[in-house]
Image (cartoon, rainbow, N blue to C red; front, side, top):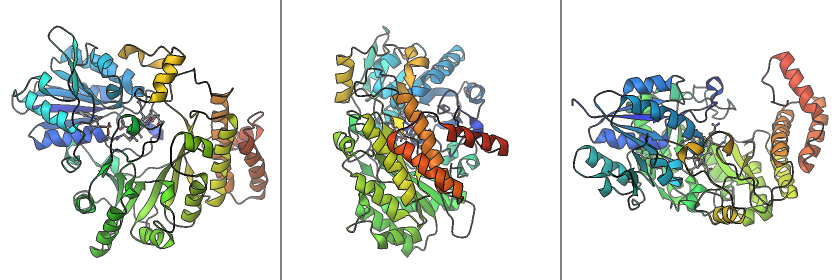
Length: 509
Ligand code: B12
């Protein structure tokens, strides 16, 4: 064999993926990390990316040849259907190993690897398991000696090996973009809001991701990091700056997304990063994820905001989760509604774009709590008309969380027992639909859908100067405050206007 080859396959984010509407696309984190490790150890690595290319199935099949020793997928639950379909096709022509990594195999390793088209699953964090796989591919160890995987033994029985150690972040390589055929399509900073990264001299944004932190220090009840007990580990400011400089030099990048659940949690690192940017007179733009609670006199105060802005911070993404303090406390988010509103207020008028996500249907949530969420969202738009609020998503229950076991047992929910059953109608917003959520109020799905449209409409009205918009704004605010979704005539009028003017409709039927 000339050179051992590994084919990595990233699937489209969902089965009905609309390529023409695609926003930002970054190369897949799990596959990029594994790819960099394989490449460092002498393998030829080829990435096929279904998030970019519609004909990814043909490309993947064409990439798999007689040199190929391993084909890898990494997937969420919503991608099971596509992964199964392609794995079956690959098995028809290729007798080597097919591996599935990512969140779905981690949640359901046994039933996943039981399928005949899947040979290996990665059951936890990937660094140690990837090194073990390399030894296996080099003929040095058997599969049973590799930590953190599942496979079928000679008798066809599923074997899950002992868990791997959590990744040591300093050992994880930075992404190796040379495993991609072409980096250019990933560099374009397409965003719902074109002005997210405001450049000083109107220069074109060339955006690249850098993996700067793994896991999270908080234990919010709803979060996957808490169930997986992923502790927070982070790369140093020095290592980040070295990578920034490399990517600026090699790819002409001028903006970076720091992939990290909570970048500012280490004050020391944040200030070291700022010191380095200033000392080395570096000019680049960046985005981080962080908590709403850091905007206070003792930490990110007015002076620090100015310093961050001057040194290129352009986007700060926050999980706000709920506008109801009761719900925030139940889920142990450890933030207050006042802090959510304050973060929107202090970022108003700066170049730092404030982005938020919310969740609906959390445990204990009542109709009035949901109304509080939309009321707070509207207040945030009042305080900072440029905020970006992702339409609230429905809470998902993952195995490992106490709430999941309680609900499944109490309501005798029948979970899919085979990997083939994790597709189609059983899914809602990317995970298993659990209808038995006792606190969910009537008309939840319909009301949330409609209120999300009204929230978007409110944002548009607030950013529009016309008098009629101000009047309509009051009406829409009234609807959001009270979850009044009946007779949505304003949405229909707005949609009609959009259709007549050729703009993108709101989606109100
Ligand atoms: C980035 C991200 C995305 C990205 C990319 C997805 C991806 N596959 O990476 C995008 C934007 C596409 C995305 C979309 C969605 N996402 Co998302 N997303 C995330 C997020 C925030 C981070 C994932 C990540 O990069 N983690 C860091 C890496 C290092 O960890 P990792 O992926 O687990 O990889 C490690 C191991 O698993 C292993 N590994 C993984 N792959 C491989 C491969 C090989 C070969 C090997 C050896 C090892 C290995 O090694 C890695 C290093 O330790 C997670 C939440 C989270 N905190 O994890 C949600 C999450 C994965 N998303 C989720 C969901 C539901 C979605 C959506 C379906 C729904 C939605 N609206 O949010 C949408 C898609 C719908 C659509 N219409 O587009 C859920 C998935 C739950 C599930 N059961 O599937 C999560 C867990 C969020 C949550 N808490 O609910 N998402």
